[in-house]
Amino acid sequence: MLRWLARRIIAAALVVFVVTSLVFVVTHVFTDPATVSLPLEATEEHRADRRAALGIDRPLAVQYWDFVSGLVVGDLGESFWQDQPASKLVLERLPATLKLVAGATAVTVLLAAPMGMLAAWWERRFADHAVLGFSMASISAPPFWIGYLLIIVFAVQLGWVPTFGSRGFISLILPSFAIGLASAGRLAQMTRRGIVEELRKPYAVTALSRGFSRSYTIVHHTFRNVASGFVTMTGWELTRMFTGYTVVIEVVFAWPGVGRLAIHAIENRDLILVQAAVVVLATLVVVTNLLVDIARRMIDPRVELA
Amino acid sequence: MSTTNGNGRTERLLEVKDLTVGFPTRDGIVRGVDGLTLNVGSHERLGVVGESGSGKSVMGLAILGMVLPPGRIMGGSVRWRGEDVLDPAVANRVRGREIAMIFQDPMVSLNPLKTVGSQLRELLQRRVGLQGSKIKQRSLELLDMVGIANASERLRAYAYELSGGMRQRVMIATALACEPTLVIADEPTTGLDVTIQDQILTLLHDLSTELGMSVLMITHDLGVVAQFCDRVQVMYAGRIVERAPINEMFTDPQHPYSLGLLHSVPRVDRDDGELTGIPGEPLDRAQFPPGCAFEPRCNEASDGCRDTPPPLLKIAERRWVACYNRTPAGEAPA
Image 1: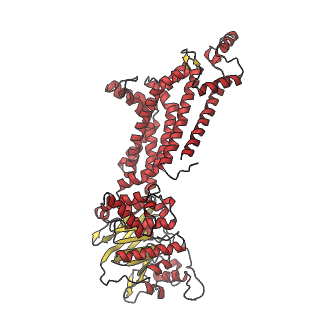
Image 2 (image 1 turned 135 degrees about the horizontal axis):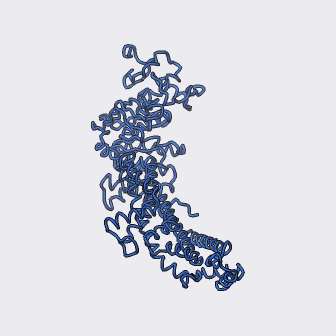
Image 3 (image 1 turned 180 degrees about the vertical axis):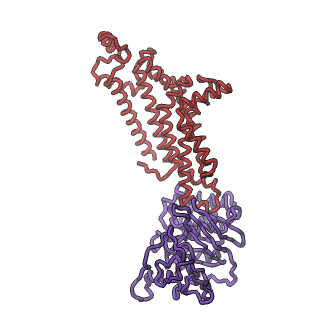
């Protein structure tokens, strides 16, 4: 187990390295931070000056070496928009994003697992159709639209929660739902399908034939067997959240997270800061996958220690 | 081995009458079990034999009131000591506690993600009502009963860590956990090595004698029936076609299908020439002939067989057969 874990961590670190290198290729080979930061009509002299100031006039290999060695000590360059270290800016915003993702994940899991089990329990009955309806609606609706809808209903009309910003737990509720509902819809359907399938398997039939109730069998026998898939899917949803949903929803709710920082960096043509945000988010995705692998190993003893 | 456990007095435990299980298909409803009638008495080992697709397994579950969707029980009754098992409240009480099932493939019939110990524990806790240290004690006892050495170590094992024979022993232990009066064994030895098959059958036989349990043995294997049962019923296309004490079934089979089955089994005790199979294909259940279901494959069939299925009628003491060519005159419907 420990050797497996060590191997997984090394593999994850390698993936982070490759991904960040690809980011470097995009930001330094296809274009460069100096060009991006200047208006289109800037003169060649201007560009040269800016290049020299940012150190981009040096050979690519040297820049890459700088980038990589900086990465190791957590230095992601200077943001010229904010005139501060990019890593400091991103890390300041990171807790807000993590809180948002945690909230959205909680919504996802706490809605999807019971809804999936309920739908399977009442297979082809009203509750099943209701859960399916909810899933289709939440999957079809774009998160930003769900976000605005939630704001209009719960913040503007009912006034239960603030419309935007990050003021404690209460302001976390709406954005968490805006992100989590679609994920919950997908996961509930997957859970339902999994349980219905498992219920036909011999071990579930055996449990039922021993006199265990349908609900006991679902919760204690079949859900365990779909849990591995459930965790994997939750991991995918987390990936979607880090790379897409949080960015949109942080903008909708004026949430001070990494996603909104990245948007502002793009608006201000600060490629270094964008690069820093992408590196951090990509790292989070890789870490998520690592955690999913560990969780699956803990759920199912048969998962190969490969 | 096939002696009656005979302590004389037998009591009727299970009475299945006209049980019919239907599965909706594109071609209409297919009857997996069609008007099945059978009785199991106390201390009895009854065999139900038939080829795959004859409805044996569907029957086993249906006796507990269970049918995999989209199938459903369309008619008939199942009574356990006079109580209606198709009533969910009765079923809840009877399942596992009075009637326990053993399934064909113990690899997939045990929960792959639960240890042997936890599968026994949940039964003893929730179905028997044991608590605390008694659970562990009883678990060890059960594993010991089914001949598993290193019982305390095996409690921590998962199904995939055990051999096929060992898994089936665990399966039997979980069936015995609630001290059932009847065990329904659905092909319990299929897929196991021949030597292991024999061990498992002997184990089941000994346990049923020791614990005074009845066994309903569902199998395609006449050898298993010969070795294990007191009485046998032959099933074809969801119906019982013949019912006889074990010796008479082997010495004097009556139904043409039973005859065919016996002729397709190699015998070492007798040199009676070549093996013959049963002509034709196993029945396509969607194309149910209106008359005797075996008629298309039967070499004794005549026009009279094609209209209505023959009823199961008594031809001698403890002997029943459903065939127009065997039914005594006078009792046969016009």
